Image 1: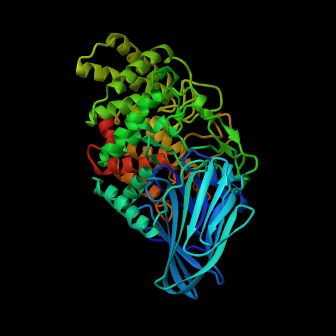
Image 2: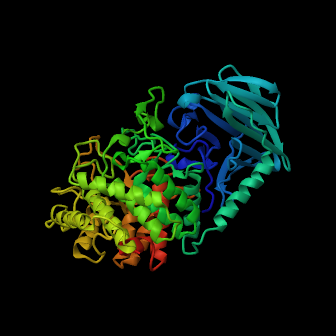
Image 3: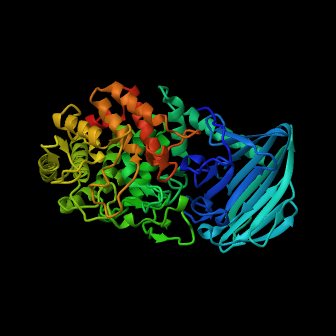
Length: 608
């Protein structure tokens, strides 16, 4: 995409941000070159820059041109996660490079300013605030150009090519000039206050290392179809959201970016959601990234552990199970959207689609030739044995309703998929299993879903059994092979959703005005659902319509090619956490579905 000229005074939007990261955590950089969000040392650790959800007093790092108003434009450097911000003033031009080198000994944020023409005067203002913008560290000066901050278990070292001052309020600041041909660098390094200090980083060597890392990784990509730039940027975003030590994938690096401007639908997404399991595995394996797909498969098996009956919808980055939800009252929220929540109470919910997603992911791993895993099969069998005892229960569903449980149609269909995939594996390998019993449950589920989950008057599958409400999650029925894409009930469902849940070309999850979910109504469209709509159209052979939907979504990517969770067509603005893994992996899968006769959706639906 072409870089977009921006003004520091532009209205504040979620699309204002770009992400940098080291495959263990990530920072968000505003289009005015201020770093406003960073959790250290992991995605789900407490933030030390939290002005994204508050004010500058809650922590940020600003580098800005001094004097006359500067014109800024930005882009990622080639196919990397190195952000380039070009600053043009009447006195000169310079480029700011922001990046986080793939982590080795420690985690670093590197900021390099390169003079291009004339001379540009800059100011750097760093405010560290740990505990989500609440705690000020104490700075200890080592030299005019080096200092260390500590608070509790956290320590951060700042090293610069220019002298800077430290204040009692947790800040470091300086002014400096960059002339044509000159380079000034800053390196901010995280470590534990009680541990050994890591070695200092050479910023220019780190820049070369980071470029090489991303060039080599992108070089493994097997995708060569249309919209390649969008696919590559989405794959880079997904790779950046992988917590490298465990293989888990963060749904987003942020918390509490609102699904509705000023509303209460503000959630912490810095965790691994099992509902994304199959989509994630298919996106990676179909683009040549078997290593990442296998690491994700192994993470899923570890998360399920020895007690699949306790399977949760989400876990911490390492597989941690307790994620208590709480509110940070000292943060004012993004554009005033409160409460600001950390942790996520959904970890306690029963969501019966989750074991189906995990089992389907394990099934797809076998079909796509990933290395055999005996623990994966044991976990799968244990989950099915547990599902035999609970499959008739209501649940909270894929959208984590905070209202009364229901027998959600999508959840019931994923239960069907759990039995179907396990039966298929047992039949293929002649494994000893109670196949007659499992087939009876599978067939009963299928009949009941077709009877109670389908509304003949609407000619559509509905949100939950006996409902008259629509839900975009049922767009996935042909993808999981529940019914063929050309079945009249599927065709009717896709058309009904296109009529009733489409808003300016984008698809809502459900109508929050009409459907109870335990929260005040109102939210934007959900981008993954819009991609699923395109997938369903493609599976039905309506490729021109599917391509139109796909291109409509591509057009709203921000200036550096990133997508949030949702989109408000009326405001022309992103909603929800950002960047959103599910949006980007859905983009990749839809591109594959549109460009390959046997793409992920069709292969999954055909069971091959």
